[in-house]
Image 1 (cartoon, rainbow, N blue to C red):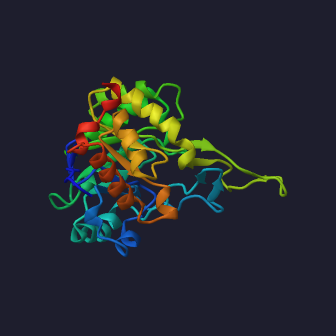
Image 2: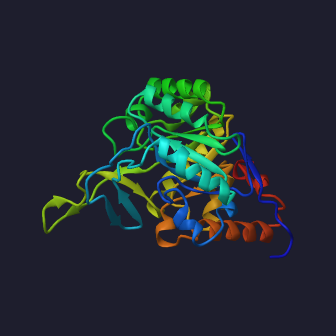
Length: 308
C-alpha cells in the first residue's frame, strides 16, 4: 500500500486505532463478527441499544428492503444492562475490542440508571457511552427526546451527571434543525454527537394493500440516506466545537473519506454489514489506500478539510 498511513484518531475522549466503527444495531454484541476477524481491528464497536430491563422489541415483520436501503422496526430488542455487564462486556474485553455502549430508555430516569450501572464495569472495559435519543421505532423514549430540544438537553445533562465516560449523543434526522439539537446537547455536556440515525419511512405491499412492517413505519438506512447524512454532518461540524461521528450509507473507503472531509472525526458502518460482515475492515483498508494515494500521512488530517 506504499507509505504508512496513521489511522489513529481521538474522538470525544476515546482513542481509536482507526476511525471506522461498527454501528449499533447492526453487529449485535460482536460475536458474529468475531467469527470472521478480530474485533480489536475495528476502531470501535457500538453494541446494540441497551436498556435498564430487557425489551422484547416490535412484532414481525420487522425488516423490509427498499431501493438502495433498508427499513427496520426492530424496536430496540435487547436483554438489558445486567446481561450486558455479566456476559457481553467481559467477552468483548477478552477480544480486545474498543467498546461503545449505546443506551436507551423510556424516561430520563431509565437512561440515568443504565449509565450508572455501566460505571460498575471494570476500568477501561467500556470506552464511551452513546446516548440514543433518536430511534424512530419505539413509542416511548427515542424521538420523545430526540425531537424536543428541551428534552434532549435534559436527558443529556442527566446522563452526563451519571457517568464519567465519554458521552456521545446520537441525533435524529427527523427534525427541522439538527444543528439546534447538536448545540443543545453540547451545552448540556455531551463530548460528541453521532449522526444520523435512521429516517422515518414505510413500505406498502400493493397486492395485500397493507403496510409491509407490522409497526407500519420503520427507520430507513443504507446508501439512500447518505446525501442527507453528509449534509447534516457538514452543517453540525461547523456549528459545534465537539467531535462529530458520521453515520449513514457508508459502504466504502471513499464514503468514509467524504464524511471526514465534511467534518466527521470518525464514522460508523451499519447497514453495509448485513450484506458484507467484513465491511468495516474493508472500509478501513479502502480509506487507508485513498489517504496513501492522496499523499496524506494521517487520517485526522482530512477532518473538515473540505471546508478549508
